[in-house]
Length: 122
Image 1 (cartoon, rainbow, N blue to C red):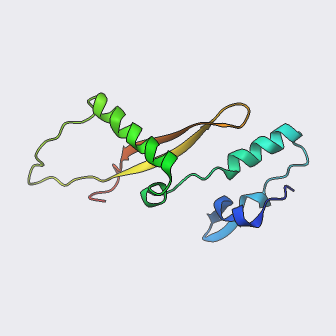
Image 2 (image 1 turned 60 degrees about the vertical axis):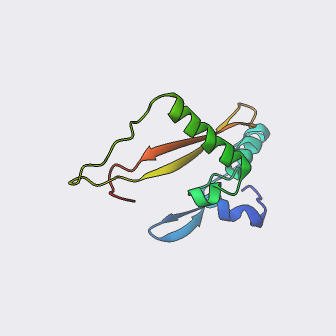
């Protein structure tokens, strides 16, 4: 098993049936080459926010969100209209991702603003 500093384990936990599990319980590095071990560690150690509040404190995520807004404004993605009385708004949320180069370096931080079509007013 890979030895990972305990300070980073919070970023790698997930839940299954409401119980927290570390991804490292399922990651066996004995069959991986050194390069693959290093790449896996880099990919898993890059922080990917799950909310706007988390991302808003980190400069590279702030920059990625600004770039997404600029792209949405440049490509007329929406029209600003008055909401009819019998209609309600739908919310939106930020979705965060990281694109890596083949050598494990971060190529770019990807951010998308998406409509929450299954909910109303959130």
